[in-house]
Structures are given as C-alpha cells and as structure tokens.
Image (cartoon, rainbow, N blue to C red):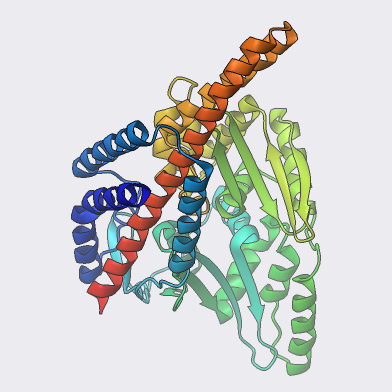
Length: 438
C-alpha cells in the first residue's frame, strides 16, 4: 500500500513540474538565465493545481492508513537521503550567460572601455563590507601582478557588476561550480594596476582584510620584496588580522549581504546573524549596533573555525534591518523588506515569499504554511499537557499526550513527504537541463 501511494505521489509531482521543466530547458538553450525560472519554489497556476491534487492524495493516504508508522517515515527519510546523495553527483550545465539588472550578459563579460565611476563614501563602505565577507586578495611572488576577486552564485550577480562598475575587471563563470543543490557561481576578477587602485580605495573602510588590501595596494615590483609581501599575505589569511576601523551601517549592510543571514521562524520571530572565521570584526559590529541603535547582540563560537554574531530579539532585528536597508542593503534587501513588514498574522505568506528569495542551504527542510499550523498546534497541546499536570489532572494530560503523539507522527511524515516532492522536482529539473544542454 505504501509503495502504491508513493508512486501516486511521484506521478503527481511529475505532473506538477512538467510545464515548468519545458520552460527551463528553453531558457537554458537560449542562454537566458533567469533566477526566478530556476527556483523550484516558484508556483505557476498549473503548479498550484497540482499541489491541490497532491494534498488530496495525502488526505487519501491518511484515510486509508489511519496513522503513519515510524517505519514508513524512516523509509521515506532514507529515500530522501538517497535523493540528496544522487543530487550531489548531478552537475549543472556550464553557464554561457547570466541575467542581472533586467538584461542578459554573455560570459565572460568584459564591459566596453569607459571612465572610472566616482564612488561615494557610502558606496565604498558597502563594498568594503562585502569584500571583507566574500572577497579574496592574491599576490604573485614570481610576477609583479596581483589580483582581487569576488565569487557569487549566478542568480546574485548584481554585486559583481557593482564591483566591476567601480573598479573594472571581468566577470567569468567558474567551471564545474554547480553541483546538485549548490548553484553555479560567477567570479569578478581585477588584476595589476586596477587591483592596486581598488585595494587603495577599499582598505580605509575595511576591517578583516585591511592589512591584505594595504599589501595589494603597494604590491612591489622588486622580486625579493614580492616574495616577502607574498609571505605576509599568506600569513594574514591564517590569523585574525581585523583592524580597528570606523564601522558604519553601509559596512554592516555589505557584510550581511556577504556573510550574514536573516531567519524568520514559523512563529514569526526574526533573527539576524553575521558569521566569520574570527571574532574581532563581529565585536566591532556588535559595539557599533549597540551604540547607534541600542541593539543587544551576542557572539558565539560555533566551532574552531566559525564565530557568529546573533540578534535574537524581534524588535532589535527589525531595527537593524531597517537601518541596513536605508544604507543600501542589496542582495538580501527583499528578505529584509519582507520580515520588517511581517506580522504574526502574515507570517505564513511571508515565509512562503521568503523561501523563494533565499539560497538552498535549507532546501526541503522549511515548513510550508500547513506545516507551520501543525507545529503551532502541537506546541499549544504541549502547553495544555503541562497545565493539566500542574492541576493534577493526569488522565486529561494522558489523553492530550496521545493526541500529540498522533499529530507528531503525522507531522514527521508530511515533512518528509514535502521534502521528497521538492527533491524529486529539483532532480527532474537538473536532469532536464543536462539533457537539453547536450
């Protein structure tokens, strides 16, 4: 019975994505990469109809099976694990163009020669924050050249274009960078004299990479001095070399775009987090936010190579996001705008929109609106159990506890089932893209 139901659900999932897959293949063949087209969470009218049919299949399953056993859930979870392993082996086709600012750019992208763009202090603060999070400074001991680079996923190329507009250079596709749930990436690169000028402009507003940028800005021509500078540069990459600097909301916005995340919980709570290998820059940001906005944040050590700065109070999170939006937050601007205006009543719809503009780190793990409702229901019942126990009503507490067990079993099954459908859809998408690219 379980196998038959699984086949039925897969057929429904395939019907759900058939129209979109044809569109994706056509998009790739034309070389027009649209980030929204490749998002499995975006729903057309046809997909919503298929989703309704899937819900009906779930209801039929529950009517026939009664309660879902732990064994059934384990089978589904093992299948999901196998699907993730299979996805990890599937490569995205090589990119030949990318989309940003409402147009398409061929790869590699070398813009027409033009005069340098005059950058404001606010622009440089933002760019420095992004570079401190995601940038890379490299020197060459054997030659007098040096390089600055920045890597982003193909559907977030706007920031790379901003660096290119500001400092020149080129944007290229990183070969074999897209595998499974990891999207293909693009890289901005600038060499030589232009790299030195960019480093000179960025370094006064930088913290974690200021010393590296200062080395690049004065990269020597003398071979012996280059060897020494290269050693210093390599050493700086292995230690906490963050410098004292004048922090700003523009810098915080850039750092969040590069190495931060915004999280909206199923209950509507908003959290903001900054991550970095070393803690000093996080302390600078924490002190700045406390002074400028009265925000309380704490730094945590997650492991030997990761520290995080977390803002967990809802009002504080929304306050700093509003300040960063005003300062020019870009990559995460849509997410920030959604959560700043969210309420407990709108959290389900906001989370659905939120999921469409974030990466694949938690792909298949996010609760949908029905899942949120189930989770809230379970939490409320658990509170009721505690209440009855406090009142000495053990029989009533036991009755509610049994109801919770049934709901939790159903919740685990439907979560695994939702993950299964999304993974199948994603696998179909990649296989279709591979077939149409050959």
